[in-house]
Amino acid sequence: MIDLIEERKQNEEKRQARSEKYRIEYINHESGIRSLSLIYYGFGIILIANAAINLKFVEYMATCLIGGIISLFVGTGLVKIASWSRTAAATIALYGMTVMNVWTLIFGYVLYILFCEKGGFVFDESYQRSIKNTPEIQWKYTLLPIVMLALAVLVFAIQISQMRSYF
Image (cartoon, rainbow, N blue to C red; front, side, top):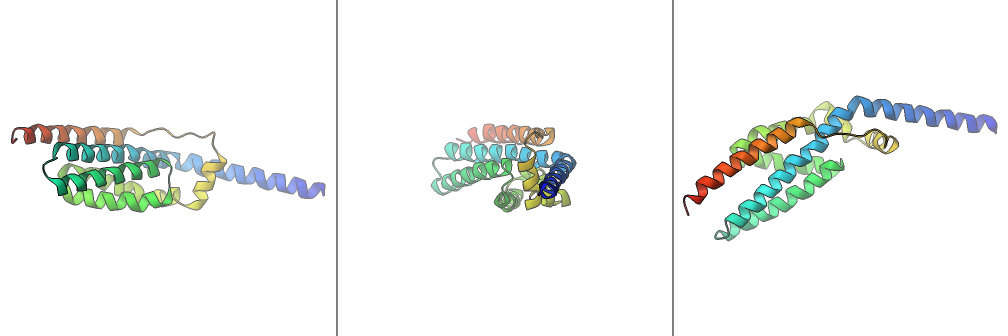
């Protein structure tokens, strides 16, 4: 009986050590994925702001508003590393790449982060268990998505100032 208890304890320690190893190895990529949420939050806010500015064009306004809300929802999923958010983020990224020039570079980066080998592993169930088993290991926002979001906001502000001259 004591051997069984000791064996379970050793198995638990091995599992914990393996979880810590995976988490430390992939924490930078996990942080990158979670940081993408800032881009989706920013994109959502920009779309909602665009809807508010274009009240005269009902269809366009509704599309921007719905897209903005969905983008905010996807950003929340990315922070939680929810498996559904990978597909949803990729769908928005592909749409964003076709519609807006400045977003092509940004969403190209998003697709790379989501679908490279490490991205696949971070969304895998085994890594999700590692996250749950190692709450003491914390992630931090990475700088690149913040810089990309600032660039997008700057370009959007310039576009808005140019649009205002038409009205």
